[in-house]
Length: 274
Image 1: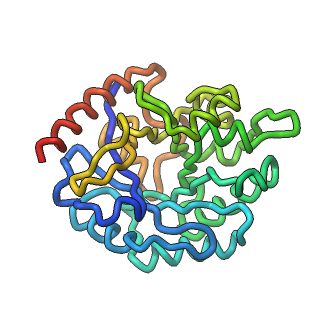
Image 2: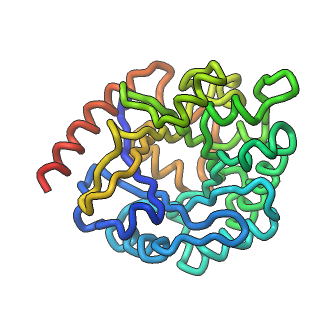
């Protein structure tokens, strides 16, 4: 249905123990940070992973990729972190966070190549070839994933994967300062990153800060993540194997953004009543 959206959260140790029993029903799932680099683990991941299932929320896990750390060690770290808690066919394919250049120490082909190798390896480790979700932002791509002429690099491989778009600002919300500076420096907008944009793809999931952050019932703010499409679209997106991908869920127009605003306003009102 045009304009229909599903609301997801993504949470890390910053959000602590998520009070799933108090979450409004409009929040249908969570994608949890499980690991960081070759050795980093999230201390609240195990508890939140199990509680998400207990409260019938769709769940997924993501890994923060570190470009100068061993790919094999990072794959093992993330795989162990998730598999130790139980990974099921009804969980999202693994998500790879691509927004770290080690303060600009790794850029261009080296940055893109290393991340692509990691992403392909983690798909294989989870048995989800071709389905792994790529999380990144245009601000990052246009600053660091560029050639010698500062033009964004293409990636047919990553463009064939679902894109989770970190887009700030959005819906008139204030941007985080460093992203605002990055966007200004790169002379870019919140448009989707080049490999997907040039092929006419939409983001599968759109992340924004929800008017300063969505405050959870435990008093901690988190980002809002919007999946474009119906509940059936979301189930098909998660399924293993999923249907062959052509375009990401959504419409050719921006009418889904109207659904975001209405749904988010309702959600914020519900949380305020708790």
